[in-house]
Picture (cartoon, rainbow, N blue to C red):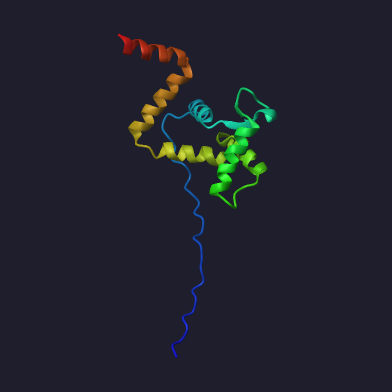
Length: 144
């Protein structure tokens, strides 16, 4: 009789600590602040309109919209979060998390030097020139 094969114990890979971000040349605290403000604008905190605490920085949705989104999540993730945890996730501001900031700094630090310099120039420009003026200049250039 053939000897039964012994089961090999399963193991998962160990989490790897990422290296400290490479410093990006020319990126001061103000430059990082500008970049994170832009990122915060495109990844806002989303809250049900009855739970708004900061009308300026939170995207408001109705309870019905939130429930509809949650139901779609539940269809695709049967063991997904509770409705309360789902709302907490939407309410969170990813830009405020130190891990996210470190990830962005690592990403920028690993960009090609030319791309880093172009981005820092753009961020300096955004810091000191109102965006409406930039749009006006761009549109006037296109129309001429």
